[in-house]
Image (cartoon, rainbow over all chains, first blue to last red; front, top):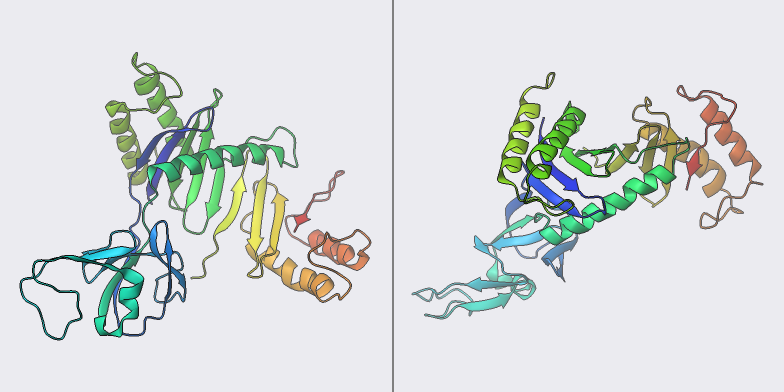
Length: 236
Length: 99
């Protein structure tokens, strides 16, 4: 029973607060021999698996490290080494670090066996902002799509891996929590976060409404509220 | 463990249930809030009604909208919906939307 993350979206759909409590790390490290059975493609996030998912490594996963060395975009830097080993390719030169293109490196059979770590990177700040405004719009669309009159927007959204709860206040602010599908009392938790917002953000004379929330006491109390809702499933 | 993805969302008055086939057809059914997971019902709707009366029909294009003169599909669909345990006949009939 876990609360993965908590977000606050302002009245115009902008993300003003985001707190990641426990997001599961998605990483798989395995040793491979030539030829590599994945089809890899360059993308703006790095080198991605395009086709051929197997053993937990899915399409869209990105190469995070090769042989323990973290990648840098679509290239990998092999550090300096003092001895030149004879059986190796041309990537170990005394005192020089070479940057190799990953896809080329993996097409060369002399570099195998190789240990590659695949995974999914966390969302960066920009992506979170975009997704928050998309959710804001989807919330409004759900109101319009209703077969009954006077519908609210999306209150709960369920997938097989997580559940998203959204509490919209009368003033138009949205408190969103992503949790384990079996987590209970999330609606009570969101109402509690509204109380915390009005205490630590709104009553703060230096805080202007609809702006990003940078109040340390707010963060602290949100963390405490999450711990409480995770520990005690039946009471709040 | 088969990955299902998005299953449903709830507002304060309705629940939107979703099922996507591997071929890209999306089945959406709007129900009352107290209906549980009906993914297997939507799958049954796809396999026993949609496939039988639309896909296997050489005159039906799955790209264009399903016409209202596609009587047998609508009849069988209606029959199927009325046998669902959570279906309740009201003055304004429940709407079922499928794409």
